[in-house]
Each structure stands twice: as structure tokens, then as C-alpha cells.
Amino acid sequence: MPDPYWNHNVHYQKLVLRAVPDRCEQALDVGCGDGLLVGKLAGRVPAVTGADRSAAAITMARERHGHLPNASFVEADYLDGALPEGAYDFVSAVAVVHHADFRQALDALVRLLAPGGRLVIIGLGRNRSPLDWTISGAGQLASRVAGRPHGGKSGPGQGVPAMDPIMSWGEIGRVARAVLPGCRFRRLLLRRYCLLWEKPRDGRFGRRAS
Image (cartoon, helix red, strand yellow):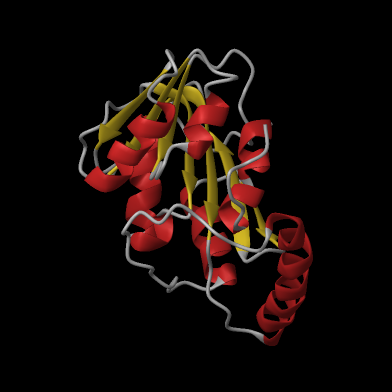
């Protein structure tokens, strides 16, 4: 079934889905918005939770995807400890972490992961260097080409204020590697990056995601 709309976040949901580990039983999508990604995860994972601090977003998600027997939606902020720690084999966060302090966001997301669980972040960065601007320029052209079959970028609109990222792409990569040793970080063409990390089963950092 085709997506009901297209934008950069939706474009990279396929990366998130490919990162779901084998034998994943519990998944969490942080900042789930209207639940589009939760609906896709529910086709692969026995139990999926979508969490968002916006009551309007959760209402919309329940209206659109509440019929799925293995999907649930909760109004909760992942930063405040309202979600159960160590409960999820897979945690995704798409266009979410730039709304908070980056280290604080990483710490909160890691706490939600079960030992051996996998974290995937699709995030935004700020252009600082000539290379950053060059990649962004190429990305704008690619975005127009990729969005043409969909009529351009659009979305459901959830009343969440837009926020520009503060950290540069390079800063994000350096902090991520310091906080999550062994993580995989790469910049994506359409104004996003992908961060992939697997929590060690022994509770200690340093194990590379596979």
C-alpha cells in the first residue's frame, strides 16, 4: 500500500524498517506523530508502541492505526521516565532528538532499550562547513526528483512547532561516537542522518551494531 503522503522522514522509514533486528518482540517509536511508522512496524513486530508528547498526535494515531491489534499509542515524553526502562528490543526516533539536548536524548533512548536492543535515529543537523552546504544543495535537487511522483513534500500536520537543529552534522557524529561507542553514523542525502547502535547484552558499551 502506498504511503498517504511523502516527506524526508517518510522517505527514510524504509531504513528504519530494515534495521529491525531478528526475533524482535517489542518495538517503540518515539515521537510517533500520526503513527505511520508504527503501522509499518506492526507488520513486522509482535507488539509496537507509539509514544508522543502531543495529545493531538496520539489522537490522530489512534484514529488512523488504532485498529491494529498489536499496536498501542501513549501520550508520553521519552525524556521524563514515563516509559518503561529496558523494555524494548527496538527503539526508533525519527526527527525527534534535535528538540532536546543531544546527550540527554541519547541517554534517555538507551535506557529504554533491553540488553541487545537496537536503536535507530533518523535526525537533522545544521550546515556549518562548505561541504555541508554542498551536500545540502545536492540534497535539494534530489528531494525535488524523489518527491515529484508524490506531488512534493507533505504531511498530516500535528501542531508541533518546527525547530531547527543546533548541532552540526560533524558535531552530532563526534558526540554520538563518544556516547555510544561502536555506533554507525552516516549523513543521508535528504537533509537527514542515520544513527544505528546496539546495546550490549552484558550492559556495557562498546559492542558494534550488526
